Length: 225
Image (cartoon, rainbow, N blue to C red; front, side, top):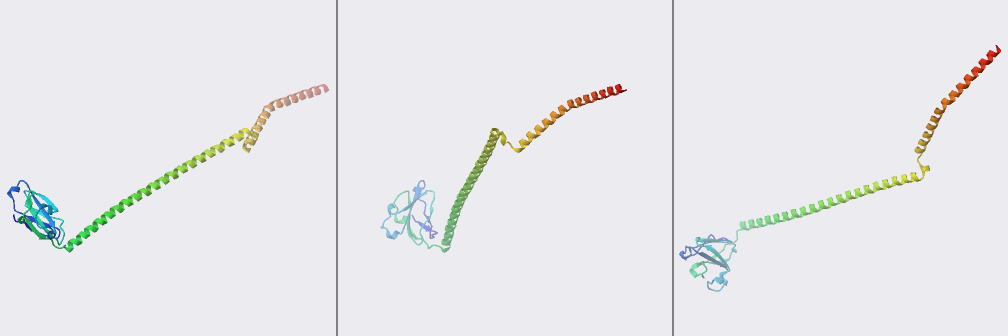
């Protein structure tokens, strides 16, 4: 079986092989290993660190994640049999393309930048939430303190009013001047009413005495005549 390796780059290679009738309903095993020159001779499966299973209907496979400027040996067998020399192929990967290196660096930098931006955004959201939570809690505490102060002030004013009422009830002489004046006005009105009630009697008595005096004068004048 002739193995062909094509489209070799710094990181990939495409391997092709002819169809094996006995593997049409089974699978192919692709085995490859780097730095084959440093290994012991032979094609035992244990010498290969990477192995892939390919469906029997396919006759090609793209090997990825290869190392640039590296020698590889690749073998294709039916099922899990040990490969023979005619089922293996040695190839060398190319040097890394500078444009691909720069693009990879750009992709890496872009990924790092996006990750950092997301992390900073999350931190900013957490800090904003913490600040808003602290502000809201202080506002509630301030409103609660104002309510307590207003309640204390109302209680203090009610207590002062009750104390004044108690003192006025216990000491009538300490009533306010306005109350004394009201009392004086009330007494004056009462005296005026009393005087008004007594005036008609006094007037009647005066009229009676005047009438009597007039009769006496008339009698005296008649006697003289």
